[in-house]
Length: 91
Image 1: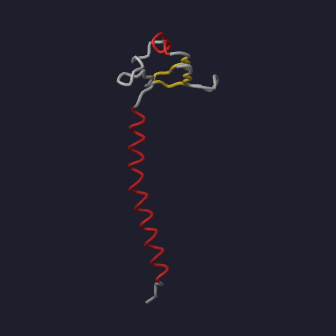
Image 2 (image 1 turned 180 degrees about the vertical axis):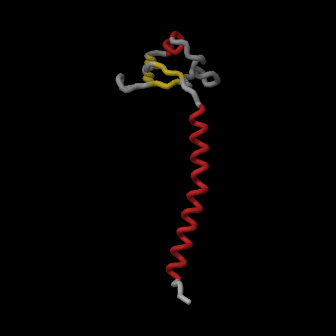
Image 3 (image 1 turned 180 degrees about the horizontal axis):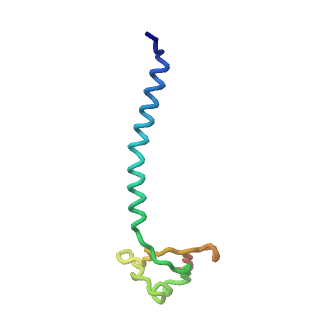
């Protein structure tokens, strides 16, 4: 009968732990990506806000107060050609 060294047993044990850990992580990552796939965004041009009045004139919900801030969400904005997606200044 052959002798199995302690190093081989340790290596085998570490391999088992690594495989088991990988199997436990993969479903969680897959589950998260499935949630992200379900989120739908509306395509929109880049947004430029140059004053507080621009929020209202462009139709963004809210009024700029702490209890009712202006919100911009749910949009898929491609800023590749303009260099920005949302630019807010002078507010």
